[in-house]
Every structure is written in structure tokens, then in C-alpha cells.
Length: 377
Image (cartoon, rainbow, N blue to C red):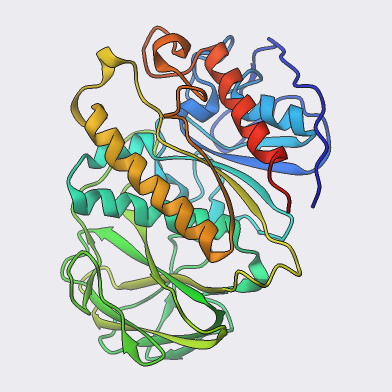
């Protein structure tokens, strides 16, 4: 895949606004479609003509980036959203319901609102990373390399039902019920759930007969409960997020992943998808995800969970996530918005100290464009 850039178009034409579930994209330039997922910093809130949490400014950085690359933008970002909101179709599309081909292009700009909700406790930071990494990986893996939990490529033991969390969800209310996935690669992934009121739901995961240890519980028994949820209102469902389980350092052979529901509790054991990744297998190409780091507020707005220390915690997790997925062979391109050469909150923020101004959006777009044309696929 080779791209040719065109001149970046900077146009102050406002934003396309529309009711929930009926977003209208801003004028586009044709070419491949790039989807944008994120919050108000990706949406362009506060720019000219964009004063609601569901509008999309033509001067937001994803639009500038799409223009520079000659792509069509479908901006699904909206203000107040976090990772949990992409579990369901609601205010935006659910990314789980978007077919991913080897040529898919996506921008992923979450972390900021997740940080505000979950705060600095290490296990909650891990909750956020698990959800965001599961979704980033979903966007970076073509459909042909995924095994959906509710699909035909899974061997079920016990009673399983298709859930309503997203198009991949399958759940069981039976202790001992299991799902067996067979995937190939040097790294394997399994995406499970964390759910509010999920206590005492417990499950185990094995790869090639070896139990996987949960890094949070430091045992071979995984807990499904989520002990904090986001703010009510625009978000669709703050009671469910994803949990990303990864096993690496394997031979590039078929591997058997077994998910077993040990105790379904009241919510049932939920599982979403599995995948195997071989970094040497690029014959069919891979989707591309441009991943944006957390963005610093201006100094006077760095309070509570948005202080510099907590942002650094989430930034470090973002760095590790991008390195991990890219190292596994996925096309995940990190854009570090804490770099003053990319975005300077002191001079490039709006008066609220949180959202980038026009200069800030232009600066971020420039950095993403440079990263795109500097990477050959």
C-alpha cells in the first residue's frame, strides 16, 4: 500500500451536524475511507460552528489529515465518549460492527475521558488499557484473521447464547461451559469482558493446555467484575468494557485457546473474539490504525484525575500498547500528543484549556500526516 499526499486543505466551513445515530460527514475529497473514533478532542468540539457534542468540525485534525492524504473521512467521534461507549451501537457506530478488511483505515483517539473516569489506581489503569487495546487490535486485524465468539469457527461445550453487547458477544450462565478457538501465529489474543455487578463471575483461559495468569489477580482465575463505571448521559453503556488477554513468544503454528466459565455469577461469562498474529505474514496486507496518545490539559486544568502524574501513567500504558501491538505485526502507528512538537497545550488549547484550538488541530494533523507518509506498507 503506497500513498501520495496532496496539499493540506484548511477550510473554515463549520461542521456537519446531525441527530444521534444520524451523523453527517463533512465534505470529503473521495478516495479510501478512514474512520475516526474518539472524544471531543477528535470530534473538534469548540471549533467554529461546532458547539454540540455530536457535531464534526471541518477544521478538526482528522479532517485535515484525511484531506492531506486524499481520503474520505467518516468521523464517528463524539464528545464525552470513552472506550465503554464503543461496545454498543448508539451515539456512534459500534466499531465491533464495522467490517475490517486488509485495506481498512482507522483513527483511534480514546484515553482522555477514560482517564478522567478511572483515575490513577494501577488496576483501573489496566482496565482502561485492556478495553482500548482490545478495540485497537480489532481495528488492526482483518476479519479473515479473527474468530468471533458467536461465529461458526468455535467449538462450544455447554449452553451459550448470543449476547447484545456487540456483534461478537457470546455468553453462558452455566458453570463449566467452555469455548475452544484455534488460531495461528506467534502471538494469540482473546478478548473477554469486565462488567459492572459482574461479581462473582470467574473464568479461566488456557493456551495449548497451559493456564494463563491474570496479571491483576496474579492467579489463573480471571475476575469479570468492573468496580467503576463512567458518567451517565451521552454514553451508551458504561457497564461493560473489554479485557485483552495476550500470550506471545509462541511458535508460528496452530494454537488452541480454551475459555472456561468457572462461575457465571448473575451476568454470565462473556467472551468476544480470538485472533492469532504472525508478524511475518503480510502477504494479504493489514489494516492501519493511527493511535493518538492522551493529550495534556493546560497547567491550570491539570487537577484531579487529569493531573500530570496520572496523564503520565496513561501515556506510559499507551506507549507499551502501541509497541506491543506493532511489535506483534499489526499496523498500529502511534502519534504522541504529549510531545510539544505535536501539540502544545500552553499555546494551542482553546480557552477551556482542554480542547485544541485551530492551531492545535492543524499541528496534530501535520504530525499524523508525517507519520503516515513516513511509513511504508
